[in-house]
Length: 59
Image (cartoon, rainbow, N blue to C red; front, top):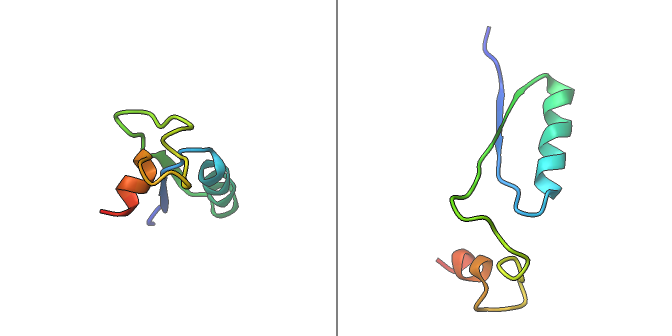
């Protein structure tokens, strides 16, 4: 029998919560993808074109 694995990345916690809920619903294993360098609030500022997240999304 195959087991389902849910891998997720969540900088702010929203995706983590969704992944945890889904894994419980379907009885799946859960794995968090962690960045080597944690994101700060400034990194996640989508309105700042020079923020880390904005730069990463433009690649």
